Length: 462
Ligand code: SAH
View 1 (cartoon, rainbow, N blue to C red):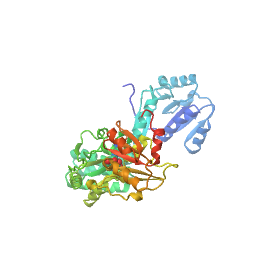
View 2: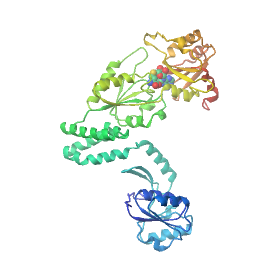
View 3: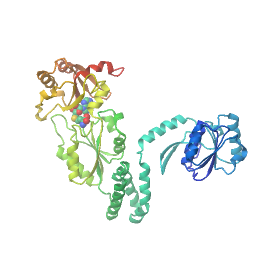
View 4: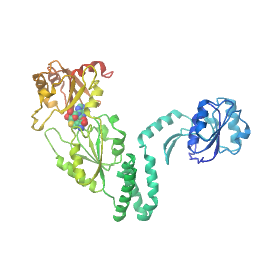
């Protein structure tokens, strides 16, 4: 280990910054945020620092640095562009054992500023020993994305309840309790800004845990949209819930790559329906969701695309609500958006379509009985889900109800995945093109003049 990371309490302490330019300003800001009293010394001080000094406890001394400036300082930063001065400041500080940072010159530093992810009171400091600050910044970006913005609120809530938990729960039960709180329903309330409800839920959970002697309290269900296939299309929230769930209930449309991101030791339950074959009925799924949540599990109901678009998500949460089970719904990218983007077919376009309609291209018993005449609307893109088996009927009926037979149409197979294929033609030709190409589910059918843009807008290399 090249450096020992420490967190420095600078509240009310005097810090010196040597230098008056942009670099100095970048260091002054975090020092002020940490509550330090900052003194800036430089012959010329830029307007940025002057503006900051107007509103913050910042002392500007417009002259050359003198050794006496080091008196009574807790930390010194040299941010001058002058190499000789940097060396002198560094040497003087090191001789006095005064922590010194020289910007961008790790050799002259005794302390280094890390990249910071701030969720106060929780802070993450990332250091690379001064060797690759850009890498530290990239890593910070990833962590920023992973940690909910209100993570700090959760720490504060935990702090407020620490005493009460100690009072009410035996030491060996506390850890399980905290894990449930910090990764469960209460944390979710905090992340969505409902602090008052979180506080109430916390009181309730603690009472209940005390009553049950520390046994787990009721679980909850996350109804999460897993998107059309490419795992990069998951939302941050989806990923977070996937990584904390105890059990995942998923169906066929969820891609393997997405499933791979679920917490490794989570139990997996496949309830997929294959066309015409319903191995697990919807009633059964609904019942399972309730059962597992009642046992205290955090249940992830993972769906392809968006749970509220042809996903029966509404029915599932209705059932949960009836049984008083806590749940949350996380939207996903629906197949229409995913396939359209990855195939270079904008669903609306000023010159082509002013509206778009999502249609189920499949009915029970395979009798496709749609109001065809209503679907033939100029300037509208039609997107059929679950339509592969009825492709021929769809194209024939649209043409029979007045849509031009040469209206462009596309079929996107396994959209957004590495195996995506796009078949294009028109109402008259598409069924034959797909038949010859051996199109396989899942597929999406897009009808409308926007499809003509595919050749121009498809990704390079496709
Ligand atoms: N809730 C899902 C849709 C479920 S219905 C969503 O919002 O996307 C299932 C249908 O979605 C499939 O029959 C197919 O028409 C479509 N679909 C889902 N994923 C797809 C993909 N990767 N490529 C093409 N179509 C897809």
